Length: 262
Image (cartoon, rainbow, N blue to C red):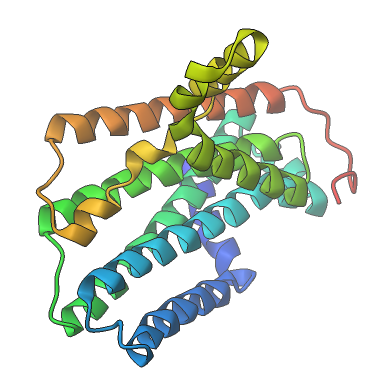
């Protein structure tokens, strides 16, 4: 466990060395400027607009950060040749994979918390607010979503270089977000192989829409039932475990060659 935590801490240090903190600051600046621009068009006084657009930006920024951080961890170690001394310490490949995932997840989770705090402050300045319980539920479920996305990025990066792993993670997560909620309707009109394929996709891809509580935050609805939130978090844990297990199966017998990963 100590090795996994150490590897996770190294992800934080690597983020600082690579000046990823500047990328985060740029995202935060864009986030703030966009929210402030609402006032220029007379929308800033409508707190619901501020909440809705702010939450959308928080989700998009955290999605981009989660994919970019997770998908480059393993290819970067292989490209730089640091994977060889790392595995010689000795550290198992499972520990490397878990440590990299944990670091990427915690980094993106902390960044997302900053986004939420910034948005809450902006809303408060406009005389609005979020329900404390609903906001806590939304952040917890957002963490569950980020756990799945970072696990998927890590899994793809076990066999692909960073750019390909990032692109594939973007495509899969975007497809899961946009297509999955519509599959039940599509199945009703599909037949044969198409219907079977839709059902396979429906059960294979993660249901990311389950983690979205933005409407409750925007419209001031009551908190979600605790049992539903808990079950959703358990589902997120299971999907994360599935993707990490698939990544480990792809990584455990992989042969490393210096300079092979570009």
